[in-house]
Length: 397
Image 1 (cartoon, one colour):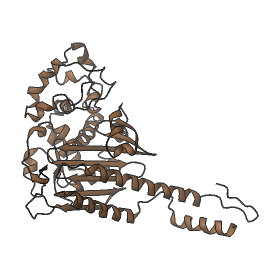
Image 2: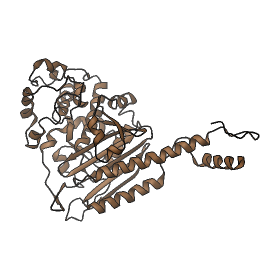
Image 3: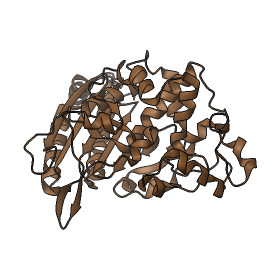
Image 4: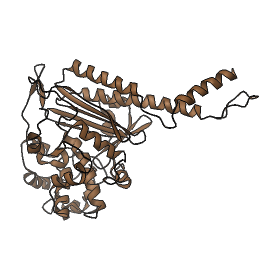
């Protein structure tokens, strides 16, 4: 009995690393699952990237850029990433705040003096931090209908004089696009640079993101770009790209490939401290406001135990693990990025179609990976036990 225990512990010690590694077979298995789901759902085109530590360990494309075309999607194909753009706003703002350009507790009206709520006493309570933390207190998705009606920001801002927050800013969650994008005038006024230039100089270029850009023109100028698709009568149909949400660049204006976003996740994991330092990463992932609605998300609700919004990022308690996440959805495109800081693991998925298969893919990946890594943890713990002395019957664990 004792010799058998020693043999088992010896084998575990030989195979278990001090820190769990990502099993290569699971990466390959996810690729097969990804391809299978794309085929079953008839998705026109998609790409994904898996990051481990400071490397992109897998990055692939599937299908075509546009229905009826033979041009393939690859890992460098540019997609609209919709609200995943908010993660870049959070990162850029943290860089500018660290440089002293503004303070998180500055009143928004200092930079947007024309902004006002119905009750003016709320105005000075709305701080810059509240914009990126989705904690303005305003009813969710306020005036998104006007974005979709192609209104420019200066035409929408006066409408907030008709509203009051549902709670004091900072105290409750309400997802926004218009208000979130007020970080743009804050950054422009305090740096004297436009938003696209700030992103390019402070994030895209230092991280060597080869095809990332901001805005409709940049998207159209990308030679390797995916077209948006919507489903009608059981078939996917390509659509032209609308400028509407591009006018709200911090909320939804970034274009990127799976490789671009892979490098972005490597920075989130702490491997580019010259771009995003550990204090800045801690700041943008610090939980600001609880998001109970996320606990009811299809597919995700089987795994998420708690959920918060930070600064441009969501923070999920995925079973025993913490997952930093954001998704994006704009006409014809879906996007998701997520990473585990503790496991040094990240995932990017991009679709040129409005399909809920995205949730199936993401939850499958994270549940499978976390289960495997936790099993490795247990094996490593057993391997590290003090083995029993020859005359004893039990191990000291």
